Image (tube, rainbow over all chains, first blue to last red):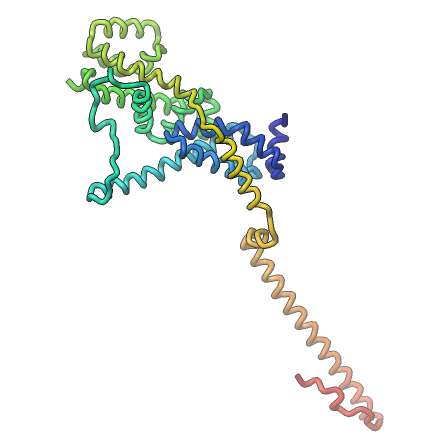
Length: 196
Length: 148
């Protein structure tokens, strides 16, 4: 097994074995994180390919101030957030088109119609409710929430990945929780006194 | 209503059971007596529990193979050729290279005309000597025709 330094120098020298080891070691982490952020497995796999190519392209600029894993996480999060931003713009154009009757694309919006029959929600639907709530978060809050909750990373590492202070990460996490709460309460408005 | 708001403000922490014990008990007591809050908690709890299942998201089989294929394709394309190296040269270096070539061209041109000038001067001085000494011309001037 190669050490991290050996692995890095192997990648720099375009050693096929080192590159293969890199993919073997990090592909699961990258796909899972990207999938949680973009909420689509196809897109997550495409993003993972882009992440590895970016790693190969910019490994010469990697200064080893952080671990390879943190650096790869940073690339994954940035690529996934960029993907969301681009998609949002596309969605906006599509919605604008459908407003004038140019498109049949249906968009599902949670907040449009609060569902009361929670007892008919299946596990899959429950996950969808959660993911829609997460989708409604601003990009930075979403990334911090996913890294904390799903990848179970410590705040210090999240701060390194996001290039923020630990205090900012904690604040983003609090705001993410607060926004998710608001979203879920609205979703289950029938049970909440807010709507009475 | 006041206690309903208390639940709304701490809903996720309450569902996660990560609140301080006193606050937890206070909300517990309220939820037990408030049907709306009880329904809210029982609706949100299973949704929040799915976060722990989401951690175990399984990736598709052969995802690694697909990624490796793409990465290998990139590596093959990335092998540096003379042309790619040339195109990768930064504009500043390329400009410097062109300037050096131009300077070299000018220098070579100057060197050539300098040589011609020296030859002409030599012929002129020889002719001068011959004239001074009245030596008959053995070689005609046309032999030293430097006209271009």
